[in-house]
Image (cartoon, rainbow, N blue to C red):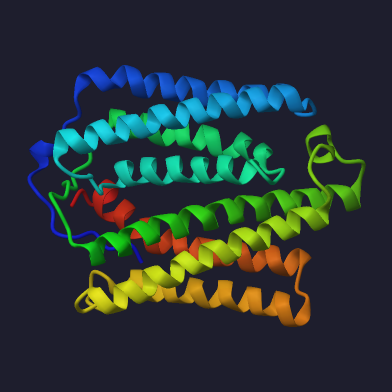
Length: 280
């Protein structure tokens, strides 16, 4: 239910040319990390090198966003800028999770997406405008919305990987990549950990939205509000079902992906249509 407050003139969205090199380096290092993971999927030493590269790419990505933020006196919540920020946070959360959990192979999907979103951000100027400032209440709502989406994004990717792993283990001898993954039970445990953390931040986002945003069911916000609430109900129901009835496997995968699709539509659906199709 990410809300985009009042915006400023479009001239402020231009990015300094001297940071293009920084962003390009970040993109290249993201892709290098991905290639290392793919080519040496079973070698933990190489994978650690890939993670070090990913940390470097994220630091450069963050520095790029920080410089643009300073240049524009605020963050531009246009479609590509927001997508780039979310992709960076998803990659960062993955690396933080990989410190104690065997989830680094999700980088095969996440790091190229982060590179692609950053490339789109530096090549296409958003029509939406940056914010000069906003109060702590709106800051809380925006930040928790982005973190919730990022955590649940990782959970959705984990669910997809879990579905592929389950299908291959049942149908025929699994491929090398699937064989290198942790056991199904470990994968499911990690999935529900991500869902639980994401639900906490989604709850804070919804509560802060109801408390601090006037007329949350206004025409331009009603779809975001309704879809976000539906996603919250699905994720909450899945966690309750897991706790009380032991839901797992296909049920967990289907519920996770359904909730994430609703959240994706809530956060980015309208922005995509308005900014990229209708050019408003």
